[in-house]
Length: 377
Image (cartoon, rainbow, N blue to C red; front, side, top):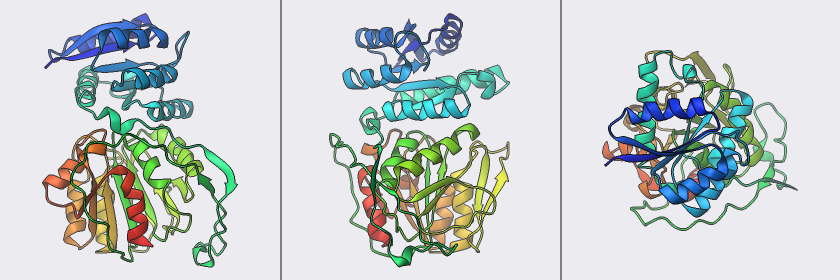
């Protein structure tokens, strides 16, 4: 089945370039183009494409506003093009909150200097997100509110000897139409986990927001987050999560120490490992590896350092990253959870866990945060 694509960009040169790349693939058909967000909405309604590629900065109506309207009127998977800058990261994260599925750098040389590799990746992205679960990503991040959370109990004193500062209580999560019911595991049993490790890719930024905003400030286990994301984006993403959540979130740095109530996000373009003393090691990204950061590498180091005291969670994403690391964790006696298919944007990484018979539990995205609290507190 041919995937129909609408290309949206105010640059005629970029529209032509993207259209030529996509049209060269026999499985893709460019059915139309648009020069601004308003045209994009009209064309989406008229042409009913399977996928839309969207620029952000355009006249009349920007890309994020267009995505919001499209998700309300004719939900369609959207691939955003963005710049690899801090501002580009902020804009892209806003677009993902608005409902976009994934993103690519607009400067194709930031992907690869090999034109053939660029063409291959762009076409693969289009074909993959055409199969995405549109409903699963319909979510807007809650804005932080001014009311302070209750003062943490004395037990939440940090390893540095001072009480953790009060965090803003997040606004209630928006209600969503329930996805079709799938297999669900019973509520977890409590265990003294020394680490919660969460790995994800496509759809992950929104999924992590949903999970982490449900955790209390005194969550007792350290958390590590591995999200496939460019180097320019992870700092901005960590800052966003830190503002939304009652726990603390920061981009991991070499030498950081794991502690309760803190989530460390693996920096883009690098690898994150954990040693037995609870220290984080940040290593250069290996060009031989597809993913930088790689879930398998962080999971594998956690298995070596913490044995059966890890709770690993694999969320939405393409591919199978995390499966081999989960296998090592499972062999050591740790627990593995997978997100269910109905709530995934892309049921790739969790499916790899389930098919390999590694999942101790399968939960809907909206249930994972509360089950983490039940399992760890």
